[in-house]
Amino acid sequence: MGLFNDIVSKVSHFAKSLLGTSPAEAAAPSATPSVAQVDVDAVLKELAAKAGQPLNYKESIVDLLKLLGLDSSLQARQSLADELHYTGDKNDTATMNVWLIKQVYTELANNGGKIPAGWGH
Image 1: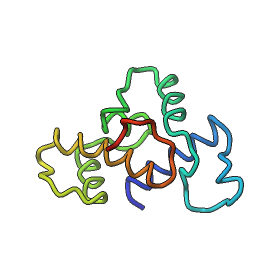
Image 2: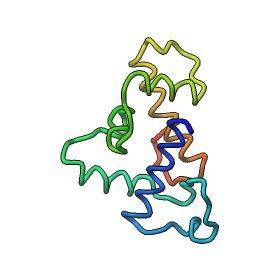
Image 3: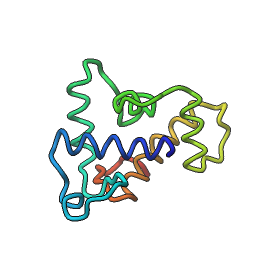
Image 4: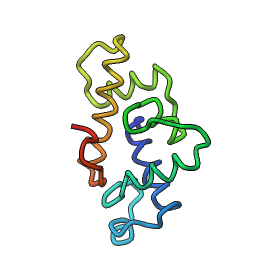
Protein backbone atom coordinates (compact mmCIF):
# COMPACT_ATOMS: atom_id res chain seq x y z
CA MET A 1 0.00 0.00 0.00
CA GLY A 2 1.43 3.34 -1.06
CA LEU A 3 1.15 6.77 0.49
CA PHE A 4 -1.71 7.80 -1.81
CA ASN A 5 -3.71 4.80 -0.59
CA ASP A 6 -2.91 5.90 2.96
CA ILE A 7 -4.30 9.35 2.12
CA VAL A 8 -7.50 7.80 0.73
CA SER A 9 -7.78 5.55 3.77
CA LYS A 10 -7.37 8.46 6.21
CA VAL A 11 -9.88 10.68 4.38
CA SER A 12 -12.35 7.80 4.24
CA HIS A 13 -11.82 6.97 7.92
CA PHE A 14 -12.23 10.59 9.02
CA ALA A 15 -15.31 10.97 6.80
CA LYS A 16 -16.91 8.09 8.67
CA SER A 17 -15.90 9.24 12.15
CA LEU A 18 -16.45 12.98 11.70
CA LEU A 19 -19.29 13.17 9.22
CA GLY A 20 -20.94 9.73 9.26
CA THR A 21 -20.78 6.99 6.65
CA SER A 22 -21.07 8.16 3.06
CA PRO A 23 -23.96 6.84 0.96
CA ALA A 24 -21.58 5.01 -1.39
CA GLU A 25 -19.94 3.14 1.49
CA ALA A 26 -23.27 2.23 3.03
CA ALA A 27 -24.49 0.85 -0.28
CA ALA A 28 -21.35 -1.09 -1.11
CA PRO A 29 -19.15 -1.88 1.90
CA SER A 30 -15.64 -2.86 0.91
CA ALA A 31 -12.29 -3.67 2.46
CA THR A 32 -10.69 -1.14 0.11
CA PRO A 33 -10.99 2.44 1.33
CA SER A 34 -12.97 4.74 -0.92
CA VAL A 35 -13.56 8.46 -1.14
CA ALA A 36 -16.53 8.06 -3.48
CA GLN A 37 -19.12 10.67 -2.54
CA VAL A 38 -16.95 11.98 0.35
CA ASP A 39 -16.91 15.76 0.75
CA VAL A 40 -13.13 16.00 1.05
CA ASP A 41 -13.26 19.73 1.79
CA ALA A 42 -15.66 19.21 4.73
CA VAL A 43 -13.51 16.42 6.17
CA LEU A 44 -10.31 18.46 5.93
CA LYS A 45 -11.95 21.61 7.35
CA GLU A 46 -13.18 19.60 10.34
CA LEU A 47 -9.72 18.10 10.91
CA ALA A 48 -8.08 21.52 10.55
CA ALA A 49 -10.43 23.00 13.14
CA LYS A 50 -9.22 20.37 15.62
CA ALA A 51 -5.54 20.47 14.61
CA GLY A 52 -4.44 23.00 17.20
CA GLN A 53 -2.14 24.68 14.67
CA PRO A 54 -2.70 26.47 11.36
CA LEU A 55 -2.16 24.12 8.43
CA ASN A 56 -2.32 25.28 4.81
CA TYR A 57 -3.58 21.88 3.57
CA LYS A 58 -5.15 23.33 0.41
CA GLU A 59 -1.79 24.43 -0.98
CA SER A 60 0.86 22.49 0.94
CA ILE A 61 1.41 18.76 0.59
CA VAL A 62 3.44 18.80 3.82
CA ASP A 63 0.55 20.38 5.72
CA LEU A 64 -1.99 18.00 4.16
CA LEU A 65 0.07 14.98 5.22
CA LYS A 66 0.51 16.42 8.73
CA LEU A 67 -3.24 17.08 8.97
CA LEU A 68 -3.91 13.43 8.11
CA GLY A 69 -1.26 12.17 10.55
CA LEU A 70 0.94 10.79 7.78
CA ASP A 71 4.69 10.96 7.17
CA SER A 72 5.51 14.30 5.53
CA SER A 73 9.27 13.73 5.23
CA LEU A 74 11.11 14.40 1.97
CA GLN A 75 11.56 10.67 1.46
CA ALA A 76 7.80 10.06 1.88
CA ARG A 77 6.98 12.86 -0.57
CA GLN A 78 9.48 11.54 -3.09
CA SER A 79 7.86 8.09 -2.80
CA LEU A 80 4.45 9.69 -3.33
CA ALA A 81 5.84 11.46 -6.40
CA ASP A 82 7.01 8.10 -7.76
CA GLU A 83 3.64 6.55 -7.00
CA LEU A 84 1.79 9.33 -8.84
CA HIS A 85 4.25 9.21 -11.79
CA TYR A 86 5.98 12.56 -11.29
CA THR A 87 8.47 13.05 -14.11
CA GLY A 88 10.25 16.17 -12.83
CA ASP A 89 13.36 16.52 -10.70
CA LYS A 90 12.55 15.23 -7.21
CA ASN A 91 15.48 17.25 -5.84
CA ASP A 92 13.61 20.43 -6.86
CA THR A 93 11.35 20.00 -3.85
CA ALA A 94 9.41 23.24 -4.26
CA THR A 95 8.28 22.33 -7.77
CA MET A 96 7.61 18.71 -6.77
CA ASN A 97 5.56 19.79 -3.74
CA VAL A 98 3.37 22.12 -5.83
CA TRP A 99 2.79 19.31 -8.33
CA LEU A 100 2.05 16.81 -5.55
CA ILE A 101 -0.67 18.84 -3.83
CA LYS A 102 -2.44 19.43 -7.14
CA GLN A 103 -2.07 15.81 -8.18
CA VAL A 104 -3.32 14.42 -4.86
CA TYR A 105 -6.50 16.50 -5.08
CA THR A 106 -6.93 15.57 -8.75
CA GLU A 107 -6.58 11.87 -7.89
CA LEU A 108 -9.02 12.18 -4.97
CA ALA A 109 -11.53 13.74 -7.40
CA ASN A 110 -10.81 11.01 -9.96
CA ASN A 111 -11.65 8.47 -7.26
CA GLY A 112 -15.05 10.04 -6.60
CA GLY A 113 -14.18 12.53 -3.86
CA LYS A 114 -15.94 15.88 -3.87
CA ILE A 115 -13.26 18.53 -4.34
CA PRO A 116 -13.93 22.28 -4.56
CA ALA A 117 -13.25 24.04 -7.86
CA GLY A 118 -9.68 25.28 -8.04
CA TRP A 119 -8.19 22.37 -6.09
CA GLY A 120 -6.03 20.20 -8.29
CA HIS A 121 -5.94 21.09 -11.97
